[in-house]
Image (cartoon, rainbow, N blue to C red):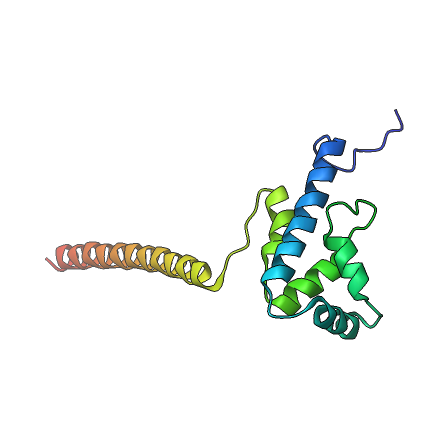
Length: 145
């Protein structure tokens, strides 16, 4: 025992790493396939965004399930998501930690729910204030008698 805390709060096995890699490759391939951009256009935009040359061949390798030695760096995943305006690639990692990416419509629903909760809280506070005012008025009337 080295006295160092484990890096992750849960055990990791090789299948999890493989699964994340394969799902990332699948989602990258699917996002590029349904995009209006060609792989060459995506590579060109990536190169401009990241400030280094990204070749079409690299994109193909990063997305190919058979190319297990090639994995897209995280900044590439983010940049491709931005270029394609597709969060499905990011969703792989987010779901792996038990979270979800929320779209604009869902975000509006959540914000409305938060506003409803705030309104209910304010209404309850207003009712407490009104009740306290009634109690104080009664006390004043009793003291005047």
